[in-house]
Image (cartoon, rainbow over all chains, first blue to last red; front, side):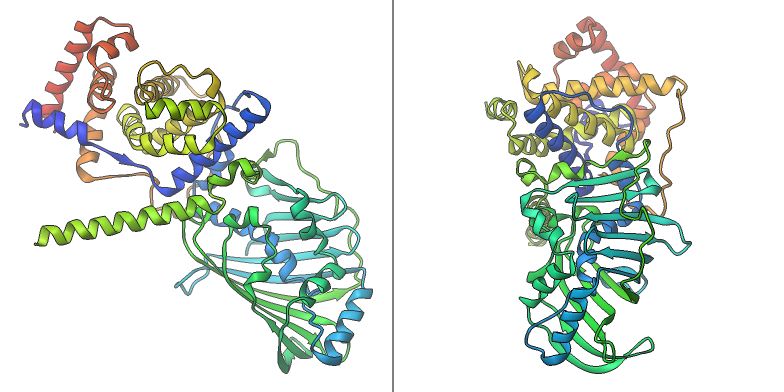
Amino acid sequence: MKSARQVKRMVGSARLKADEILDARILSEAGAALARTSNHGPQAIPPGPSVWRAIMESKVTRYSVAATIVVAAFVVLTNPFGFFGSSHGVVLGEVAEKVGQMQTMTHQEKRFFYEQGKDEPFLEADVRKYVSTERGVVEEQYDRQGNLMYRAYMLRQERRCLLVLPPWKAYLDLPLDEAVIPFIDSVTPKGLIDYFTSHGCTTLGPGRFDDHDVEGFEIGDLSISPIPPQYRFLMPFESMKSRLWVDVHTSLPVGVDMEITTDRCPLMWFKRLRVTTRAYDIRWNAPIPEGTFDPNIPADYAPLDLASLAPKAAAWLGVGGLPLGLLACRRWRRRSRRIRRVACQR
Amino acid sequence: MRDRRLVHRLRRGDVDALQQIYHRYKEDLLTVAMSLLGDVQGAEDCVHDVFVHFAEAPADLRVNRSLRGYLVRCVANRAKNVLKSRHRPPESPIDEPESIDCPVRGSMASEESRRVFEALAQLPAEQREVITLHLQGQMRFREIAEHLHLSINTVQSRYRYGIEKLRTLL
């Protein structure tokens, strides 16, 4: 039997250590609460487990929400309205002109999400995308069983980005400030042409895509990440490579392949990701079903509070700072452990 | 002194102060919550709730002595409420999301700490509370007595009985 002194020492030195996910969860919600209070005075906290908690509960939900966040990038990057450089001769000139005349576009897409270094994707998804020059972009992502994972709206007129998550009965409504409006404008064909025209791309030469004779073009410049800086911490890109395939007979894009790698981020449990996508079945000037661009959020859906992370007041929360801080802390801990081990060996 | 300055900055809505306070006391608070509640998820929720409430009303903060003691007391109160609600039947079932393939738990404890938490969970709640507040919350018996509205003798006897029981459990 242990002595009373030993017992007291054991109890006094027992520790439960917080991990980075808990840090991110508490700091984000407490920070948002402080920001709310500073702006609007104290407010009642809704009882019960938070949506954030529900999302962080399992790998699957966490990954899926992170995948949803990255939509903001894919909506623009895998959009075949874009990709035109002025220095690629007749083909791209024609493509730019033709695409500029189109009013709508629909296409399908396959997406695979991998943890870097692993061969098997943790998430496979099918996507349907609707683009209108007037209204913006709507995309729906389905899992392998055909269940709707989310519907994302990038509404140009309303200047609003809305992510609706039926599996968790939640939605994320991003308040788009002045800095973000060019992002929405870039979703239009003209905007995308302007966007990509300013960045040169490499010609890949002739090839085949599905049943089309195509000409390929590649762009791999990370500096053109379309995610506004205040949201980049949600999905920090490390590298990005996109290939556009243009039908040589019609001079219209018929496919886009893309590979993106990301750095660690809180939503991904600080794992690095690799995401590959393939857009196909592109239909130009295709009719878009009525009501597609009218968001319909059921009354029982809860708002996700990630938007409150965006304002300047919450910049410390992880908008760059937190993940870096945690990584630095981790490295520091690892280094001190190593130093201690060496000291002990001596 | 540093805590007071942090609280002063927090009252003015300084998020950096909140972050510093969190990082300074998070482990102490998690440990106290874990000892009182006996499960990691409950402890995480408890500390989460305390910090969110803490940030919600910084102007109302009354930190007379130490900030640490104040937060420990908040965690102890919150844990007590949680324990009370656990004894009541739930009013409506809460839809907990399905936990799939989640081998990594959020917070971590060493093997010895785990044994301590298990042993504490076997004590009567009154003894566990006093031991936790004294040894982990670093509160004096007098402060615990004030906090629990008990006499100091009662607090000390609960502590003694609890330690005796822990000697057999550990």
